[in-house]
Figure (cartoon, rainbow, N blue to C red):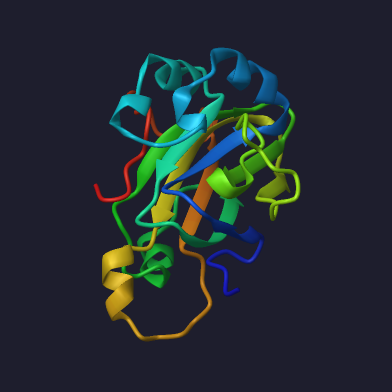
Length: 186
């Protein structure tokens, strides 16, 4: 897969569902204790107080997808993408931001097909991604390829369809609004 930044981490997996989740592997029990219903499925009623609680604490980032499909992702540590870097993802949706606390530095990125947080988790399913990053508190800048525009693009270059840039909170621009669910078609 062609990466935007040479020092990025990458992963690919199939996701059978309209949401992917980012969390610290060490935070599984804390997330399960709150029991947000979105871990079992996605609908309007699943964007609720329980989901907001885990998002507010930085335990979980939930991102709604254009469709269930193959996930090709890139994770980078540092400043948000420059305009030139973002152009590589063209067509790209507007960047979205979220807060994520990674105390162990084990970043889990999973969908419904492989969500270890789900009570229906099947360990025989294809795994999501478990990436080693520096531990800390981050503002995640999420860049996603516009799925509608991408369908019209016939260029067959293997590049990520989601890029997550983790910027340490101490270096990030101020971040005030914490959404319980980052939406696919903003």
